[in-house]
Image 1: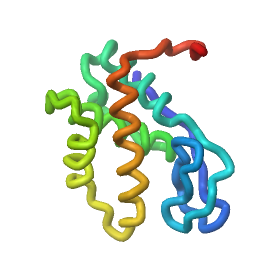
Image 2: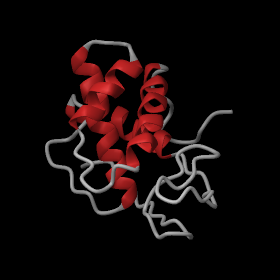
Image 3: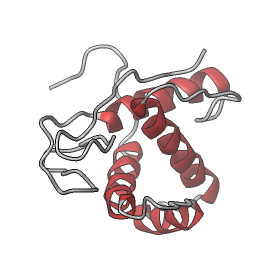
Image 4: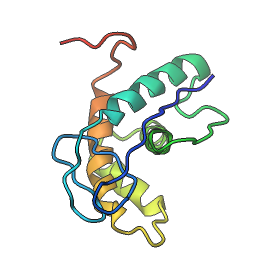
Length: 137
C-alpha cells in the first residue's frame, strides 16, 4: 500500500504540467499565474508520515507515478529520505544537494520552481506530523 495523489494540472497559457504549491507560485515555463494553489506539500507529508509508520521509510519499495501529483510526491519522498539520511537540519543545504542530483535535461526552467518547493517541504516536515484525517485550524 502506497500513498498516491491523483492531482493533475496544466498551465492554461503554455500547457506545462506543474503544481502551484503555494499561493502566488506561477508557471515555471511561461510565468502565467496559476488558477489555483494546491497543497501538494501537505499531501506529500501525509504520505511520508504514513510510509514511515507502515514501511519504516519515506519511499516505499515500489512506487508507481501515474499523475502529476504522484511525480511531486515521489520527488518529495526522495528529498525527505535524503534529509533523514543526511542527519542535517539545514533545509537549504539539503535542497542544494538534491538539486545537484536532478537531471533537468531540456526543462531547466523547472530548477527555480523546485528550489522554492523543497525548502518549504523540508521545513514543514521538521514541524512534525499532522493528522491524516481532518486538518486542524
